[in-house]
Length: 470
Image 1 (spheres, helix red, strand yellow):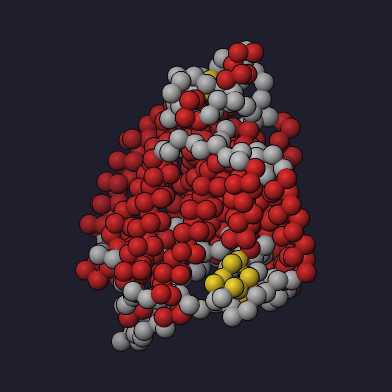
Image 2 (cartoon, rainbow, N blue to C red):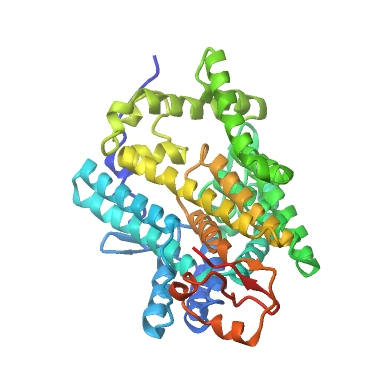
C-alpha cells in the first residue's frame, strides 16, 4: 500500500527564509533596474523590469516583520510607484482575459483563506495577489501594441542567450554561475544527469521557459531581416535550455510549440482539428484499460521523467472530486505516494481554490485562444502579421502543454503574464492602410477611445495602422 501522510502547514504558508538575503551583485542589479524603471519612458521601462525580474532568482528576499518580498515584488513596488508619482499610467479597456485573470486570482485567494482560516493564510494570499495582479496588470499596461510585443520578444531572446551558456556549463560541471545572484551553487542530479536550472527555482521551469519562448522567436523571424540574427541566437538558446534542463516536461512543451507552428497551413480548419482531437481522445479513453490521461505515463516512460506520477495526480484529482470542489483541499498528500507534489497547474488551481478557481483558470486560456483567433482573422490582409499572431498562439499552446507538468512559482510568472499581455495586444496589429498625419495624431488616443473606433493607429512605426476594435 502506498504510504500517505499529512504535510505541515508551513509547506503551504508561513515557511520560507527567516531573514533577508541579498548578494552584492543582485543588489547592484536591483538598484540599476529600479533607477531605470523609474526614469525611462513608459514603453521602455519594461526592459529593465523584465530583465532584472527574470535574471534575479526568487531566493533574493527582503523579510520585513515576517513578510517576504522576493526580487519580483520589489521590482513591482518600484514600477507601480513610478506610475503613481509620474502619473503617466493609461488604463487599457478591460478585456475578457483581464477579467478572467482577476477573477481567478480573487477566487484563489478567497477560497484559500476560507480553507485554512488562519492569519498566515491571509498574509500568504495577499502576497500572492500582489505578485499575480501586480505583475499581470503592470505588463498589461506597458505592452499595448505591436512595437511593445516586438520589444519584449527581442528582450526575451537576449535573456535566453545570456542564460543558456551558463546552463550549458552548469549541465557539465554541476556549478550554477547564477549563485552569484542568489541561486543554489550546486545543481540537482537525477538518474545520473545534471539538471541545470540557471536563475530559476527548478530545472523543469528553466527548460519550460526556454520551450515556450521558442515559438515567439520564430514569429519574430517573419518580421524582417533586422531581427534574424537575434532570432537564430534565441532559438538556439531556447533549445539549449530545454536540453540542459534534462527534464521531460520541457521536451514535450517544446514539441507542442513546434507542432503548433507546423499547423499553420491548417489555420482555416482548426474547428475540424479540434473536434477530431476531442473525438480521438474519447475513442482512446474508451479503448484503453486505463483512463486517457495515462498516456502521459507512457510518454514519460519513453523519454524519461515522472510521467506516472503526473498521470496518478490527475487520476486522484478526479477520484477525489468531492474533497476539493468547494474551496479546495489540504488533504491531497494523503491521496497516495508523492501526491503532495502538485506539478500540474490545472490540478493546482482546483486544489487551492475549488471548482470555481479551476474553471476561472481554464477560462483564462479559453479567452486567450479566442483572442488569438479573432486577431488572426482580422490580420488576413497582412500575411506577416497573421503569422506573427499564429506564433504567439503557438507559444500559448506550448504553455498549455507545459501546465500538465509544471506550476510557475518563481519569476517565471513574469514570462507567462507577459505572454498574456501580448495576446491582449494582438488586436492592435496592422491593417493594410498607410499612415497619414491625421492618423499620427490619433495614435495618442487612450485605449478607451481607440477601442470605439473601427480603425485606429498604433504607435509602433510609420507606414502602418491597426485594427484596435476590442
